[in-house]
Length: 114
Length: 115
Image (tube, each protein chain N blue to C red):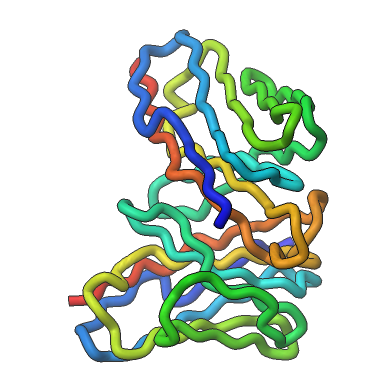
């Protein structure tokens, strides 16, 4: 069974601070996605990382996939109140039984105070 | 392009009843996955359908079932509801259901409350 450990579970910071969310596993994933979910809505995809060591930037967000494709991180620079939400990492298995299945981390609830 | 739609958005049922939830995928998407989201367990995979066939299944009891129609729309059914079935049920659609370039797009979910 593939598991994704996401940390921290909660983050409460002031506007302008930087933060990093981590996603770790003992399993290899063929790809890893980061989603953001607002209350009452479904998760919205932020980025997909595929290649070990890959780094992707989306404005103030930087995503990294570990060399061994077992871990990933999300770094937000100069957080803003609009970044508040639930951040989820999700991995697609590296095998033939992964059809349509994403394994999700427990999520990080981020609150950015003005 | 219209997104994934789920109906109903909210449901209240009592223990022992059954419920059917519906999901309409993005046009052209043939894979539909279902997930259960609870505060304690997070998002857990229920099953995936592609071309009317269930290709993958998570670790849920047989009370949870689903099906997919020829137009790719999908339904999931929960029989003999238990209090612990209270959750947000999310469906996601994608082109193929597999592959690093194949993104899953989620609907807004159906909030099920079992009393």
